[in-house]
Length: 395
Image (tube, rainbow, N blue to C red; front, side, top):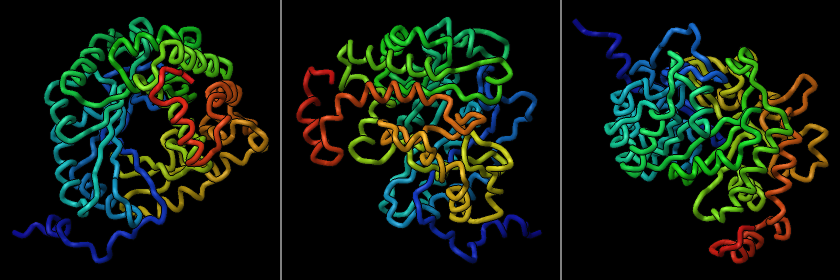
């Protein structure tokens, strides 16, 4: 007997997926909030949510349409995998994804993959996959053993530090590129230098610091991050980086992106773009949202199979949260607006102001001091590089 449903899935679509006129990304959560850890400040806690892994049909639909909907002229298409803990989707899931990417990628277009993990499930087979296919790995870590084991325990409340370090060691052994991501909250503010030193001692060359999101488990557990403590911590990282003369050896993404934005007028992060809304997120069931930190009815865009991706992106970029993020009155006369652009809309308080504003101002004021003498254009960038890059001067 003919399997009509299977035959229909194999049919060539009657209409091609229209291209989006603007570049966009979709952060994919193939396993939803499922995780083997129970981080006390998790913005996306599993709680009682059942585990629903993305099925093969939706995976293929997503990959095919995501590639087809990229703007004309796109030369690289990046897939971002996150959770929860995305490794729980299993090795075979990503092998299928890679095969589908190769199947649907146009000639002359590079496919890249990024994956954010807690690192505790990494083993040799995972590392071989990452290395063979050029994955960029982000590994979330608390900063030291005591902080990690209290704030990022497993589901049974046990230590996760050793397992995370084992994952880091394997990434090193297999020569997989990775960065360490640290979520900053009030308890860490006084320990920036020690945390920086510990992370660098693990052989990390790329570091990223992300302010706490006041949502999910963080609200329930009473976690907070004040503007003062955000600024204090980031300035502490900046000063320790300079003190150790780590320019060219350790790359703090928060600093590197701000400097690049100063000269290019373009942000490498939605957080500090003048507008946002082009970085969507998709759940395992195909639900699309405009932002990873605004998973609610107001920012729900519908299901993948209900619309074209170009239409979803257009709807997303028109939403007020992204249109108005850099237009707030207090931003217009701010001396660091060119690299801050109002910060993340998810950090707005009830009055419509960014809760971390003062911290961003302090940090950006400090790190912009070395580049302000140079013009904000290609000539300024060349002059700055000539003056500082490749020398022992730490700017």
